[in-house]
Length: 267
Ligand code: HEM
Image (cartoon, rainbow, N blue to C red; front, side, top):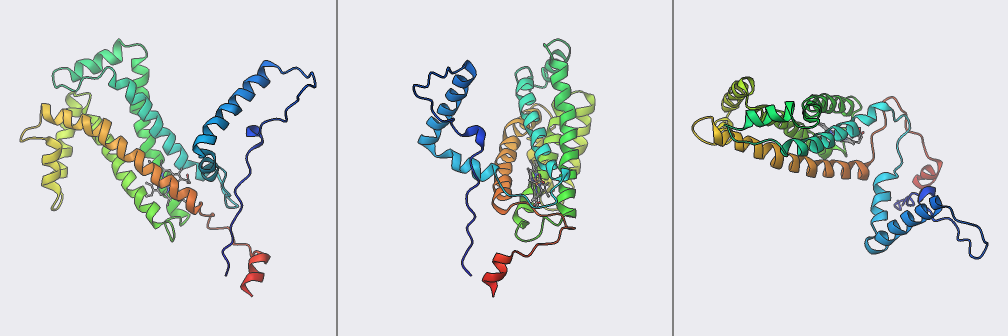
């Protein structure tokens, strides 16, 4: 059977340059000029990179009938991650990961820095929101059967994203270095140590030495703000590539329509 190739989706009207009006005397307002400038800038970059093809491939896709609000949970999780990354950058401007300074720098950030309490609150509550959203998104993909062929790999990437997100919460919890975070993390690291085979290695790696202390804090900080966000960012990229390539699954209650064109080709 010959492979049907779908045409590329059209360029949205907003991106099409308006027809030129040479010598008509029609005055261009500042808004027209600004619009023109924006379009020329996009054209300039596109002429040199051909990025618009990729952007159209990613953004203007056919979605199955029956697509509903539950399909926004993945993007909501992504938004929560971006918000964590942005607020985290501002927290890192004040936070000091040394055992003698960590608590004090967090106290300063909360009580004295401009909008510090607000940004810290966004980061703290944002982490809970991200965990809730990721579970809801996983539930949606599970109940809609989106883990089945050909999307198994995307499910596996999702599972790794879930583990990394939990690891983000675990490593972030220690950073304020108050009594609660200190003792709770010791319990967490010890629980990790009881895991089969890799458990003891994992807890040694997390403790970063025989005793829980200064080296543990800087290790947690490096994992929390460099290693894990980098991995999560890269995996979200792979996850979205597969979503764009394979399309999303129709809800299970939708029936497939028979396309008369395809029927003809089959006969
Ligand atoms: C940081 C975490 C994650 C982000 C940012 C993310 C993002 C997305 C987005 C934007 C979509 C497009 C459709 C939709 O939103 O429903 C999607 C689809 C999908 N996700 Fe995730 N996801 C994450 C975690 C997970 C997890 C934990 C799983 C499962 C273990 C998972 C499995 C899937 C599958 C199977 C699809 C395809 C859905 C379909 O074909 O209908 N994702 N993801």
